[in-house]
Image (tube, helix red, strand yellow):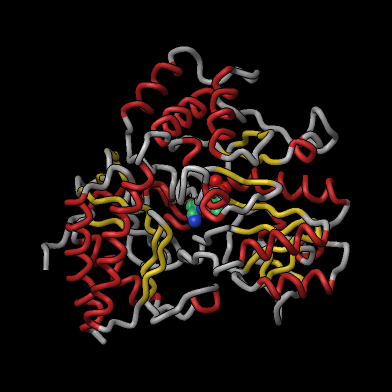
Length: 435
Ligand code: KE4
């Protein structure tokens, strides 16, 4: 067993953090509540690695939850943001950078005829929901249990009793009247979507879907699932909204819509398009987006929307993602990792299973298959927590939750993958030796 790493400084700083930040964090998952222990406080990142306040270095498979597909402190991003900062950080007026990033996105995803930049995926999803309701004159939304579209009220709704039933609040503060306008159905179950439309004919504005789910752990779409959603929504006059905040520029240069050849009416983007700075967006059909102010009457605004520094970080990132062969190389390296983990599971007959889509992956501590949230929740989260800490002690930082993804970046080398697999073999042996 490798010597235990010191976390003294992280613990000291985190105590201070708890005295001024709610739970010591600015986003709940960072509090390590599902894996226990004191969260790391991170000092710096470079390439595929992060360093904590105690000077411990880790191979990073969180990558700020997806944005850093090219690794930390990408030189082009650092130089671009530095250059831009010296020329002003925010103007509150259109800058040419916004046009440049929008054109890079549209080149990759032609379904996005018009786009609006915002500052978070939550804001993008919230705005897309408002737009869908305005465009159709309908109030109900369909989402999938286990999918996450940010924390706006319409999406903090969870399935009540039974399936395809009206949602119930998933959080205090969300009014019943709002939550009940969202219908939650099982992922990969297009028949449940059909039943929702049968039950609420002419009343559903849109179906929101993560085309590759990554917020219940990674769950790829079943064969035909996305095509069936496209057919149902088209038949019913509802919008199909792809939430590509994670999958956009991740599973393919053109996102899941390119990978699976399905054209949504609206797309939500985030993470990678900001290169680690706060950028998200919603966009799609010109006739729909033209309903947004100031062209149309659907109001949405934002002080720092299209922020020049963030635009520059996104531009420098997306320009590098256009490099020929990038995604093939990333997929190959990711496959060596996920195939290697799956081989360990098979060789030792561990009660675990690997789901993957390109450079997204989750090792579930359940035999699987994991095709939806109910099956994902069978995972042994206590074993995942032990695995998390065993891997951390071996210098590998994974998501502090079973229901998140591993993100492989272009900065991870073949040697990093081998090192990760070695740590994984040792960690799994410890986890399952305890029965
Ligand atoms: P933000 O509001 O966090 O920028 O984006 C919300 C969002 C929307 N859609 C999808 C598919 C997402 O994955 C997210 C946010 N993802 C989480 C990680 N699973 C962000 C991490 C966090 O909440 O701290």
